[in-house]
Length: 215
Image 1 (cartoon, rainbow, N blue to C red):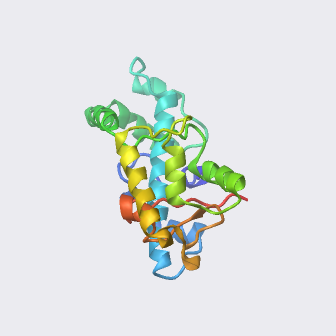
Image 2: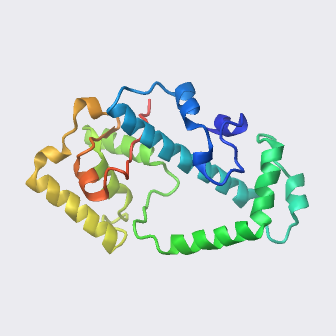
Image 3: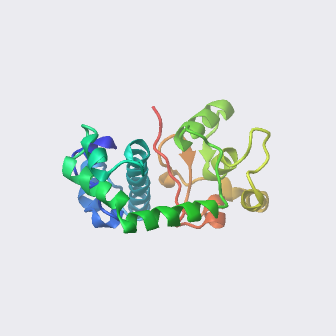
């Protein structure tokens, strides 16, 4: 993913991922299946790319931004693997009034989040891979959600998470087919899913969680 940023396909200073020509990027990086699966893959791709794009910008800010420094000082420490003009624009935004307001708004938003995960620094894909090896069966999205949103003692992170897990388990109990995956809706070898699985019924189809397979 760093190559995408380094080569300037997704400029790090833009304020929204929708400003990027995502279609061209998709075709360069992936072979998109035919609809309807292809439409779902594209939605996942845009969501996944957006998250990586935001996380990368956040990592730059965490590493280089300091209110005690001047923008000029931060620019002088620019990393070698980014476009300098884009980095300078990003630094200017960090120190601008608009950038400060957005930072405060996001801090407030994070404080209100209810679906907090316990995955730590390990990726969801890695968790899924390990669960699959442990159980020797394909892992679906509901199982992964429960695993990464529970504490080490197995208890849910908070009441909101507990309610979502309860609803997913109730759906499976009443409709076992909800945990079965259509073969044409399988992505990779680590996570099974379908547009109408128990995860989708609770979280909504727009809250697509799909992960690339690990070799």
